[in-house]
Image: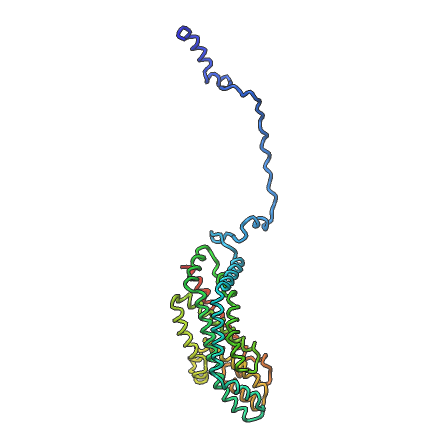
Length: 367
């Protein structure tokens, strides 16, 4: 190695990596096999035009982008909420049956509190229309019937408010707070619960009226008496939900105060003609007042249609009510304007209570 230093040095310098690269050579010999160049990439093809429905089909069925959160659509949330509340009621069937049983017992107790009312109704129906005794029997009937209508409206309103307060109890308010943070719609949440609880409101009114109707035999249709009770149930449920969302844990105490106020402003004690003008205006916001008017008109309208002395007496009693003078004894009950006005007043209170409850739900979402 030492004797051939110059020669080897020149050879090594000529065969250095830099010299090889400068001549265009390769540092390593090619492998023994022949490498084939890969096929060039094909030209990119434009994706076929797809419809909007096809693109949406690839997304999750229940989800969409809303406010930066993946949530269901309003209609989907409404259906899911209704289904969930119905399933909850089915799981709590013992509690639901207990509510219906209490309503049935309350109706039976109201019927037993007025044992003479059935005989008074029977006497008014059997007396001739032109007999003066009909006026006497009708005046006796009016006192008992007004008391019964007032107590019945208070019981229905109290049971409906209890159901409304339980609908948005502490657990449900906490559940709504969690769902609101994930982007749930307050409208779908509230309407879904209201729709799911509608059969329960109807069942409570039906269970309350069933024994009462059998004991009293009022002489009018069962459905005609069920309609004001159902409307009062909806109004009371909305009031209970509003109190639960606005007051919170003190909803039951506030509901008791509201119940007492509605009973005093029902127009029975004291009667409507004896109320001051300002108090009479305030009493229009009492759902019990409209319910009492509606119930009494349902009973008195068939009697007023008989005409003569009995019809005039029934017309005078209906005239003492707010819209009773609008009922003509010569027209059938279906065209009684007083009943329509009472139904409109009670429906307006029910709608207003539920709109305010929805607003309270929106405020809780903002919190």
